[in-house]
Image 1 (cartoon, rainbow, N blue to C red):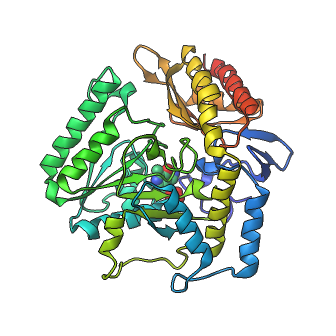
Image 2 (image 1 turned 90 degrees about the vertical axis):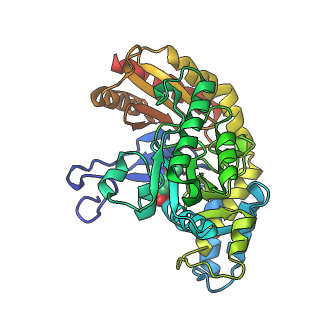
Length: 423
Ligand code: PMP
């Protein structure tokens, strides 16, 4: 349908092969031929409350009927309610929210806020990270997608975060990985000049680059390093927030308070474009008297904010955070870890409804599984009505957070059988 006129994200325009979607409900979507799939992707890890939730659709319809657009120069009840609800769910002392339309715009504004608040310009970000595709966000992004946009934003410095399976530090235990990654970051800060560094940005749980859960002590250590030098800590929760990691914000799995949190995706399950930044009271006070030099026509758009309010209410009413923690404990944790026995599974990691299997051709050398065999695994899942998310040599298991226990078990069974097609 799209090939002729749509210029599509991250794709060679000539080679598009996309499934046209006709509808969806809960954790399922279907195409126009009536093929129904259990979705392990949540689109782009955003449909946390599932497809076509009637209350969420109704909230958007109601807002559209009452006042379909309100600019930031006017006050709006929807914007006020959404901001209050997001900040009430954030760590203590983070009571203001700036709304954007996407994750990347949230990151852009977090950069600007950190720079203006500290009067410093450098930004440190992890190599294994994705922060969005606008100029600043793609510059912070550490993985290969940054390279096509170079030269990027001046003042960005990359560092290695923890990733035990392919440790940059030759670590063999989580504790070693945590300590060595912190020492590496400490030295990076020293050599970059601590008084020039505005912020360290990291994904509380690294998403697109492989669902990397930080080892014990790491986030606490980064926080301490930031405190020592007056550096702002930005937690990018665009993917990890809003139930995905079993909490409103993934960082709440640890006792760490960031200075800024970026969010998008799960805040309203992507029904209307929405993102934002949660600000510490200290940072927002910087702009009490002095204007914030940034803004967006659609900051706090009524349809987006109404959908965020409804989405957070639904998550609470339906106990979705608890459901995700239960799925982690009873299904995903044990079920996916058991797949580690399989010949091609090198590593299994994750939490909540946020998991990855890292696949290898050889468990000794850890050589990544090739694209042909990855594609075979994808086809085998689809043949059984399960739509997987394959990225490089990994299968990410990131279904809508409302997936039932039975469906989650079925997904793991199907995945287990599909792995055989790589043998
Ligand atoms: N940060 C993270 C951690 C993300 O995962 C993403 C999107 N995958 C972004 C930022 C960018 O969000 P968006 O695509 O909404 O601009």
